[in-house]
Image 1 (cartoon, helix red, strand yellow):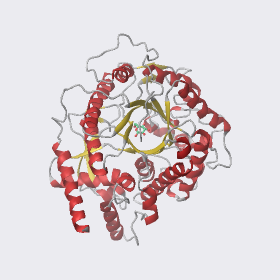
Image 2 (cartoon, rainbow, N blue to C red; image 1 turned 30 degrees about the horizontal axis):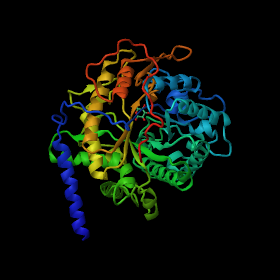
Image 3 (spheres, rainbow, N blue to C red; image 1 turned 45 degrees about the vertical axis):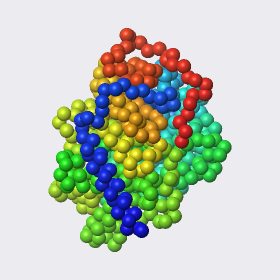
Image 4 (cartoon, rainbow, N blue to C red; image 1 turned 90 degrees about the vertical axis):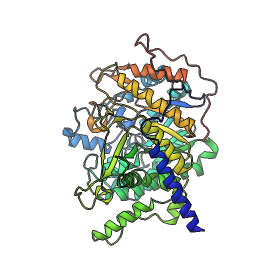
Length: 524
Ligand code: BGC
């Protein structure tokens, strides 16, 4: 019986691969106009470090990004770090006004752990920090905009990093303690929670490379320790909410994963296999424990890391094991899957020499882009709208149609209000999203990244992601709508993609979109 089941699973798996590769780059769309249903939700997003500023004001302590950018100012491309950022700490009312102008249903923002708990622990709760988020949430609710709160978007308190950060399993407990404080304060007002944003970046960028703090460069070891701990921390907080808050407050808790699309360089078997392998390392490690039937990390990743670890003289695999109890804790630990999707890459095997041990050496692939894809200001960001369609279909087929929110999608430009490229990218991806919904994706909502220009990590403010431009040299960090803000507003109102629509003026008013009372909520 087991064999028949295995055989069936493998068949479905290969059919899935054949199906998604047959979708090709052309012919995946037709020109019929499709419409977003009334219960589809639209929003915009930011994250604490990237917009708040006020890095040391009103009791906030240092996060790993504060420390890193203060010690290494040279890594910030244009020298603008998050000390002041877009100053949303002081400009939050204006931010809410922008959301009202757009007419969005929700605002996704993150809380800064060390603004709430300056020591990282609940021994000291910073009332001014609590008040800031309370003010923001109240301002949103006043205008019927749903707060969607991310508990952790990359900015760990430095105090906890000094104790090992996410590589220390105690971080699972620390995260739970922080989440409990947040739930106690805001669960009556916030109904949508995202535990962590992009655990792959938290672990791979921070522990495999020196590009992110703590720049620990514990290649091939640190990232795997971190992945296990972050995933368990997520699951624990999910269970905490379900056990102690859900009955009373009826909210939903999910996780946001980076789900960029990957496809083979060409149809050669070696490339198809390289894609599947790379997908398991970059997505499977995070999605499988929660959504696959068997739970656990993907078998192929476990096998490869175990094999390479043995060859390298380790006594056990560098990828830690999940116990039966941990697998159970993780399985099903999300009410929805948050997809952060920006781009598509081509994958093929690589014969380069990689440092050993390292994740790069474990997976041994290389990435590239098609020459015809338009590239944004950020060199990694290519526009390939069919990628979001394929990613959604892939997830449907492999993980049995989970409820999905696009929790981030966006485009970067230079300074300038006439952002035709962003508007074009938005329209084309929206068409692909409509098609994915038509083809069965259980998609509940879309989030534009970002509401405003902000600190794009080490790129500083040299890569602008905002629907609204921020004048970083002005005292009030003036926010001005770009063309794409008008296009998004129009789309939210009409619920269709209009190719040739242009605003009559660049002046923006509060949206006259009438919110039904109460606004329909996605059922999760
Ligand atoms: C991150 C954001 C970042 C955006 C653009 C996302 O993956 O969550 O913090 O600004 O990508 O790079």
